[in-house]
Image 1 (cartoon, one colour):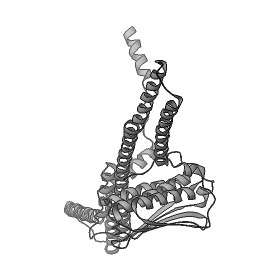
Image 2: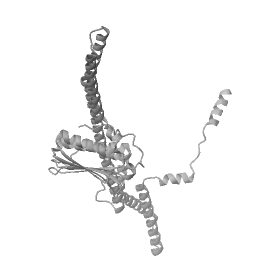
Image 3: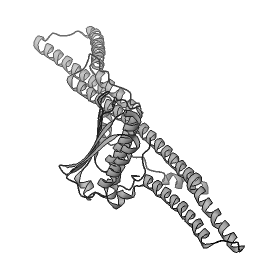
Image 4: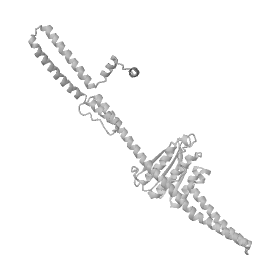
Length: 392
């Protein structure tokens, strides 16, 4: 009795099974494939036409049909309907071939195959042809964007590797200078001071003039060490850029480049602009620095023009050399890495960097920063390491 009650309770707790409504059944029928819908519709049309013809024939001619002839007529009619339905099915399948091709493409895309393309063949109408062409254009655009993203990612990877290498080289240079030059000077000062203290403690015969001479020598060493530190700091971050602004910093850097490499560099400022924000000045300073460094390393130029101008509110700097030039379409050219780094700096400010170069015709690099960025309306892009010098 207890087991029977338990079974009854389990059955009563089961989810009720609801019968499909007529609307659900109709919706299910309407979801059958389009080809089957057309075959059924055409079959119904054939039956209607055949019935109508038979009725009209009977009413018009009134010919009586013998009972013995009915089975034969029925068989002929049946085979005729089967043949007509088969021909209809073939015609429908033939006519819907473009739709099946579009369905194949859609299924492949859903499964992650983005290299598939629609091939509609000669049997197509204007609508399916337009849909297929649109699908192919969308897939081609996606493929092109994918290649662009991959190329940009590869370029970013090269830039990141180059930046890491630059930082390691810079750290190595600083470490060598601290250890080999400044460290040795400080060690010499320490040893000399300790020897002087030891002689004084020992009560040796030291005259004040001797002490003064030794201290003077140590002062010279200390000043030399201090000057080395200042030169190193100037190379890492020009103090004139913070103290006086972009224009004096560019004048100083251009004079230094010209004297070091024997180049004729002309710096022209048309209507000196107001002092831009620190991050804008740093970015443009590094752009000029990298452009001139590229010229020194690769162009074999003897003359460089650097122009700074405000044009339609935009702050523009152009660097033009008379070097050998290069093919700017070659992405593997070593100069393009420096160009990409400059372009990224300017792009972070909302600006643009343009490059013109031809073999034997020199090179022109132009950076343009919009008014909203360099006049202080735009926020500082904290993700840009503008203080880091670019080295080749």
